[in-house]
Image (cartoon, rainbow, N blue to C red; front, side):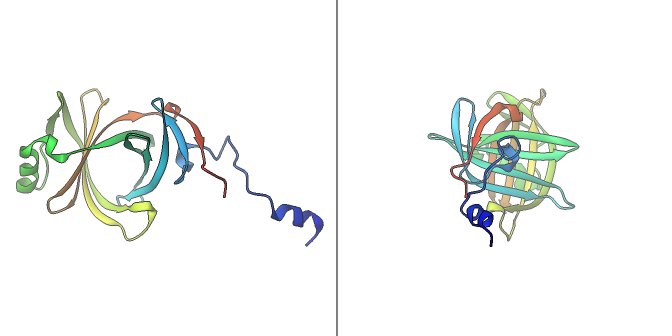
Length: 182
């Protein structure tokens, strides 16, 4: 080991602010600004829909709320941000329809907006990117304008989760910073 190697061993790796500090490279402990709040990445998960089709999800927490930033790739990158709502807010008829028909209705009305079924999918969810994946079904809805999103996920016979959200663009996010460089 030469003198140059001795000096190199004590240096911490540096992040390139032009290539490393992007949404897709965020890890647990990173901070990002969105919608006039600072959010901390508290989990990085992914969904496997089979045949190489994946989406990635970052759980973001601020002082007063939790949201989910998701990236899907289908010919181009598609970003959305969503937040959980109680499944019961969709009304008892939605749950009854799923249990009787094994699918939700094609249209759902929620808070004055009508959502239309866009996609049905199933796969495995990997919390923190770790196996084993948990099996789930997902129904994705959009309003007429494509400005409001609603998803229903089924995790068991009668275990449902619902999120509502909006499409977003990468430029809506700024000041991506790691808690520390390891």
